Image 1: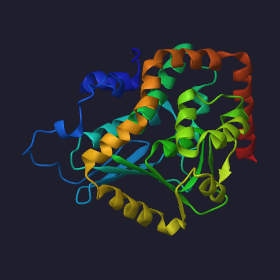
Image 2: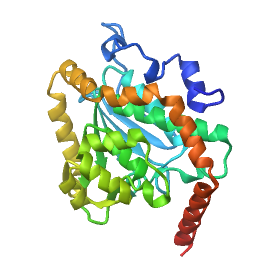
Image 3: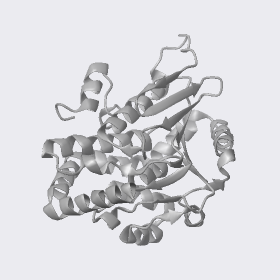
Length: 305
């Protein structure tokens, strides 16, 4: 972790190793000595994420609350990783439901302002935080369910794709997809790998090249989400699906999940610095900066209009 990184400083202070440096045998069973009392049920809230843990069911909910659109800023990503780490370290927690506290939007994806007109050091810090978010979520050994209650482009889609199960509100006005190509940006290989693992090579190839955003009914048809439900039934359905997954022995499920995802995770871990340098080089290009400035100006006009 680069010096000066918010997440890096937190890791140093807490003594928690990044996922990429953890010993293979560091499982949840070893995190708390047997016989110690469990912490009482509680909610903890940062500026951008509200976390509620029901210890009777072992299920936590992480609600994104970063107006206006839950964009993945450096601060948001840091809070996300810290919140997930806290839950992983609590043996009472076996599953996490991710959803939004903001109407009509799950997450708008990467915060473009973090990628425009900043220093190369900032780009490196930001991209390392994006990587850390994905490594922790995709490699999380808890059950993870995305309760997608609004549109979810780009990085928001990546969060949903990285979960074990995706439930989306049945509303054709809500879209989901990796639409980076529309902004002149190429989705990184680990975005692509995650997408392919969910929908298959052909659908992913077409969708990525077109930068497509898929309305909820189409997303279900493509296998991008697993179920559609009315908005008022979303949390109830997420809890029911979570209970179904938690009915299985944790150990067998965790080993199976690791087996399925290890190759994709290892690919980024072994090329992490190279990926950061590629991001810096690509983002710093004047043509990309111009494209991002135009996109930000379009958003400003849309907002003022």
